[in-house]
Image (cartoon, rainbow over the protein chains, first blue to last red):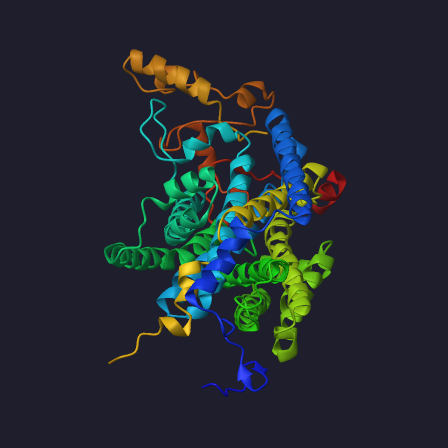
Length: 459
Length: 99
């Protein structure tokens, strides 16, 4: 299969998952040195500083929200779901790539995942954490958020199990827990490596505690592999279920544009689409800055681009079906929605969405672009903008003109909406900065299995 | 902004009274003991509130009229607040005068 047409030809060979010339030792040296040996650069401090300030801005916006209430946002009847829900769905979608890469590709034995799974999982965790903030503050009284859980209480109160918003609580919290466990379990052997290699007493103690006594014995590895596989099995259905449940928040309601059966698959595809875009947006600068082009090769960029192209087409099919059903159903509310998208006051965003999400990924048919870091970075950025617009179109454009034209309205985000949204991006980036500084961003032991040394030959 | 509670505090108060006296709420000689605030303050008596399970209650009688309609009831949301259509004079000359 080495000469397949779609493979990257670099001097007549397929770009490898790891460049040749590495041994077990050099792989370990190279990845652990980023954490242990490499001095913290000025660039890191500047980047982290900016991200940290944005996080503080988010906390300020949330603090003011708690004091004043959700009236500081642009939401009102009829648009009761504004930026908070748009951002929630956007972030949770981005958080899908990590588990897809680490669990599904593990079960499918796609070993190229080994060099990007660690930071994709970290990205997932931070994205889900950013997503989790929004429904919490959107309740208006976040200090009572524990009411969402069914627990015995003296108020004779029990959550409404027929509401998809409650299913969300379980779907998202399960997803976060499994992702965190999967990430941490994957880190254990590498934490032990860092423990053994660090020269600082504090680092030794902290990594040592986190490594939970890992010694790398055959029995450790045996149990470890079993557990890792089991967790992958648990995480796999979650990749599909979480965004399905998120889509139910809309699909179960009767609002035109929401009440469609295509929502679950179309949401899951969109989630993976935006998730891979975020993975690329992080991987491209990281591999450049830390000189990891040998580990995150053009093969990875190429494969991710192909996943984006495929899921992009599923999303395009979703848009096409929505438009088709607007006409074919003969339902006047649905056909009005289609008209309103094309000609209504928010038409600009709808056209922009089509350009970003259907137009821009078509560039990925070009092989040169799939291996061009800068081009891919730009396409990924456009796709992330497009996926945000998709959620804006779904949430705001369906609500602002529904059944009763006496209660139509417009939605304008306020500065607090923007501060909270941009603040979560800052929080996400700050967490990523910390992650690349203090933990091995590429799985050391899984990288070693990719080396020729690791191949077991049958006697 | 709050969802209308249909004056749940008034309902509960009357229900406790009725339970203490071991009788049904808002029925028989006690009919009219329970009114929502909007009902109480409407000078035209256009609002009524009551038990739709009781076919003899005022609200059931009004709901049984063919002028009764619900807002967007065709979406099958089964709204519990329903309205009575306006009584209009079909005489075209009088109809024109109205508007």
